[in-house]
Image (cartoon, chains in turn orange, yellow):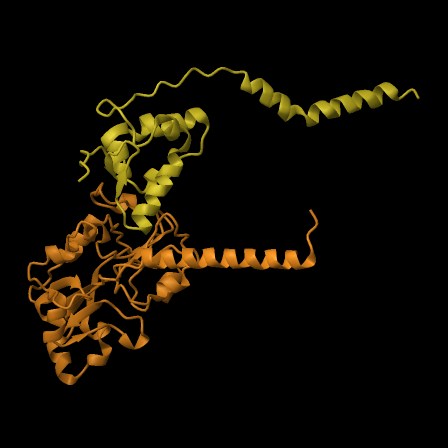
Length: 251
Length: 134
């Protein structure tokens, strides 16, 4: 069969149209199928006053560290921590007046990963080992972490720790339901992502006897945390950096 | 011309020397290993996938489970027979079925000369009661 120049051009044009049409139909079908409304953004509010009511109370930290097999190294240079406390003046240097200094002098403030909306640790990770889930939890894939510690340098809150040595010998009792880590990976608070999957609150919230930690969905207008954030004055740590922390402090 | 035996002999030695690894491999392959007797799980009759698939591709399945749990926050696995399992290495695979890392994973891996396992550097190999899938 002899194909003329005209027939060839007609055929080419028709096939081009067919391919484009198929792509358009596929694209439309996919966009309708995957469109799901973003509904959850977990957040926490920490009541600084209630938190310091009982002196020396560390129930939340103990519960967190034992649940997640966080090693306890005596040496501070090798310290691994998910939640910890620091003096008020170190955490909120901008909120210093003569009077706050009197009231809050050395008051310990509970700290943890802020689970930022736009986490700088995620941006710098060269192997995609850390990312933000659909529910607003900044999480780490320890299988993937290569231990470069870029994320530790990028985190403005010092929330990340590095395992300089095998952590297993430094874990008092291993919780078999949560993996330990290995030498050479970075770790931090995971907002109890494994508990959130079962719709349980983070273990620190449950452990707090003073009910100083309020946890909930920031996207939901009638959640407890949203009501608290409406009713009381709350601050974030270093909001000027634009990372958008999900942990709020009720002053 | 008188050097011919030396040259040919030298060449022969060279060829044998260069191909030695091949002969070594051929000889080693003929050594018959006694079949590995693994203790099979007492309480479970079926694995999460057909046995033939698990024998050859369990690492692929574990990799998929890892991606589902860690990346996609999906923790339920529907097996080929419709049974639902929790994707959990310690609870479902080890405690719920195979019992012991040393007796099951390690023995088979060393028998086959497969790569050493590093799963258990982090995941607990302590025997636990298996949770029933919800």
